[in-house]
Each structure stands twice: as structure tokens, then as C-alpha cells.
Amino acid sequence: MALSEHYFEADDLHPIDLVEHIAETHDWEFDRIHDDQIAMAVEGQWRTYSITLAWSAYDETLRLICTFEMDPPAARKPALYEALNAINDRLWAGSLTWWDEQNLMVYRYGLVLAGDQVAGPDQIDTMIGAAVNACEQYYPAIQLVTWAEQTPKQALEIAIAGAYGRA
Image 1 (cartoon, one colour):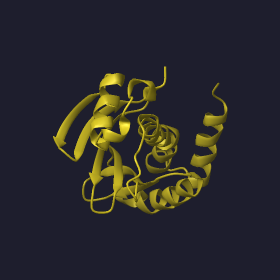
Image 2 (tube, helix red, strand yellow):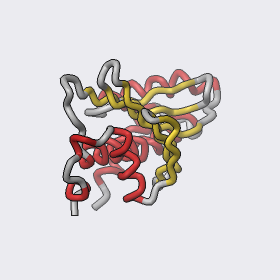
Image 3 (cartoon, rainbow, N blue to C red):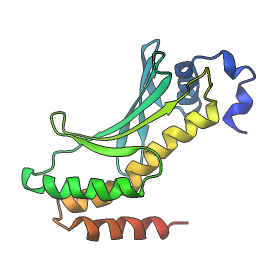
């Protein structure tokens, strides 16, 4: 059954209320930080990802931030940045970036809902899934670049080959 079948009047729900219901449906740990913000933990194959969604009524945007901790060697950061540029060329929605001060790898995406548009539960669930999938797909490449000292090109070939090899 689709998530949307659980909601008859999704137009009346705040976007963060929808996210909370999705988190409950998936049995994810979450914390409603504020009326307009929720944080949750989503278990992946490689990591547990910290995901925060925040609603900005000012610019009518639902922002998603998906993070995981890393501590790459300083000497490998130029290669990491090169890999992130190549990865972002392959991502259709969202982007990965490195937050050096916090030692976090970050996937970011903003869903603009201008003009009183409403995000449906399936759309938000897909948005969260796309974030986790992007992190999962490129996690091995990021690790190969930072710790195995492979070139970004070599690491991405392995990440792409792994994605194509799964059924």
C-alpha cells in the first residue's frame, strides 16, 4: 500500500507532520526538534545516516540534510573535493558536500513548494530514499578516495560498477 493511501487530507498536514508520520511508518528513530524541524536516524548498508528536514515558510522550501561523520586525512581532501565534483555531476537531485569544520559528509536537497503547493507523503518518502541511496551508492567511492588513495576516477568506476551489478 502506498504511503499516500494513509492520508486522505494531506493538504491539511504540515510538511513536517508528514515526515513524522513517514518516520513512524518506517520505524525510524526521530526527534521533533521544533514545529518546523525533525531529525531522524536511518539505517543504511554502510552507515546510519542522520537526516534532518526543516520547513521554511519564508521561502516555501522543505530542506533535507543527510549527514554521516568522516575524518579524511588532510592530504586527501583535494582528491575528496575532486570526487565530490564528479559525484555531483552524476546526481540528478541533491548534491554532496564536505563540511570540514564539523567533519561531516552532507547530502543536501531543497524541495520548493512555492505558491501554496503541497508535498505528498510519497514525494517526501522518495526524497528521503533518494538521499540515503545517494549516500549508499557513493560511500565506497568516498572511502576509496580518502583511505585507499585511489584516484576519484578509479573510485567512481568501482562505485558505478557496484550499482550496476545489483539486482
